[in-house]
Length: 288
Image 1 (tube, rainbow, N blue to C red):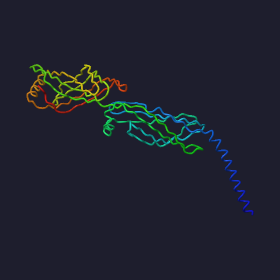
Image 2 (tube, rainbow, N blue to C red):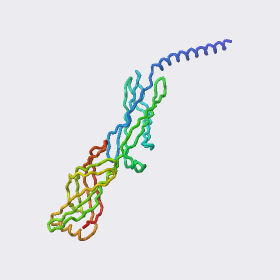
Image 3 (cartoon, rainbow, N blue to C red):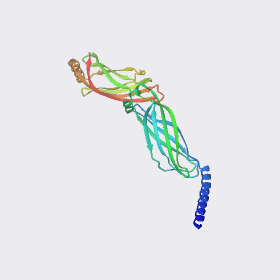
């Protein structure tokens, strides 16, 4: 009989304790707020024909008067329908009471690697993106809590213009000088205009420097078109004139090393001004 009364008393005591704990816990839960998470998407920080770099900024607002642990973050980036990247960042550190903490996630997209894996993107100039971030928090009272944010936008897809040395044409031969018309070109593979403002160049033929100079003739390269870059080169020293005569008369290919920099403007809102270094090494026949 005493044992039965003791069990009844113990049960009653546990019920009272549980009710008391719930009474304490529920008011705390009612005043403790889950963190608020927002994002404005990817911010482009650097852009050229090799890659695009950006930052995904996540703002975590701790709405409570006590610190919370940093969340663990899993995020994905889709380019159109292509899942380009998915990563997980371990949690580290704390977010102070009633504080908004900005978490910055660097994003880098090398264009060559992207086009090699997805050649269909070479036909596009702009691609929509979707970035999704899932944040997992360890919170007092609540335990684990999750929050997700999604942002969309557009990213430019740039294609590096192709510089080539198309021809070396003998323009005139005189005892005192030899003049060559050299034609280079720029193949614009983008959907926007490129205007060449200046070309600095050096031309080496069979290990002899034929010319170092620049041209400020403005040349417009329309989208998906090839535009000529004409250069006139005159050789005046006796040794170079003799060598040029010999090369022309031999009717053989010459080795060339053509390098320099194109200074350009474009109609793209993402790339107003840019420099395009180049170096071309190969063989070419001098045409009469």
